[in-house]
Image 1 (cartoon, rainbow, N blue to C red):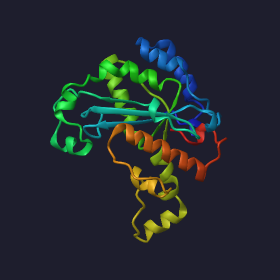
Image 2 (cartoon, rainbow, N blue to C red):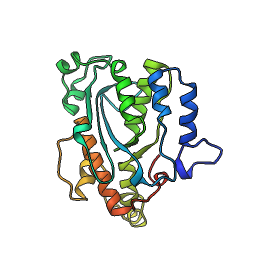
Image 3 (cartoon, rainbow, N blue to C red):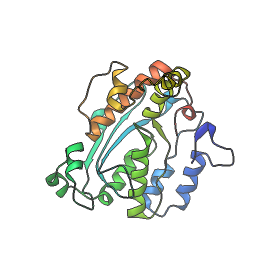
Image 4 (spheres, rainbow, N blue to C red):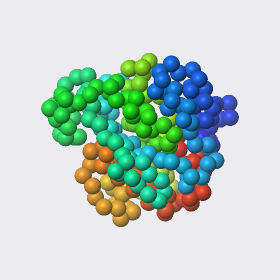
Length: 240
């Protein structure tokens, strides 16, 4: 799709895409989301408003599974603001499976009294508007939100994300030393959220609570930036 500094010049930039969508979208909340704009490719990360986002879902495939909770925490390179964050439990369109409950610990009774995704999407989009989204594993948050907006509004919801798992893979999976280790049959380092955090000396949190995982992702990103990047790193070096 749109890939920042490495994209082909024939593809629209994220800024161009947002400007176009702000004109053509029919859904008011989605129009406002796109009209809020997106960071420029060369904008230093220190000047960008960030939002850590985490979704708990009933599975990994947005075509077959559904969102059961959403957590987000605003932050920047210096400060994380959990009190200003948001958390929703969402009622999926089908009954929870035992495996799903065991994973995210959200029960039948909790979702029974929770709003369906269409009832809170406008709030979610408003909270994300104007911020660069930071996630741990980009194949969950963006595809599931896009699928939810398409299913309930009939339009696409696409946006750039910074993926802390992808950043961690640059040093733990993709380097020359790591390739040698693979050739020697040595086990790859884990880039799961908790294991990645441990390499930076960050504290252990209970996993699979959407807001806690969002805060954990924000802390991990700050640590990655402090160790591997500079405050004036352009966002196009970080996002996908």
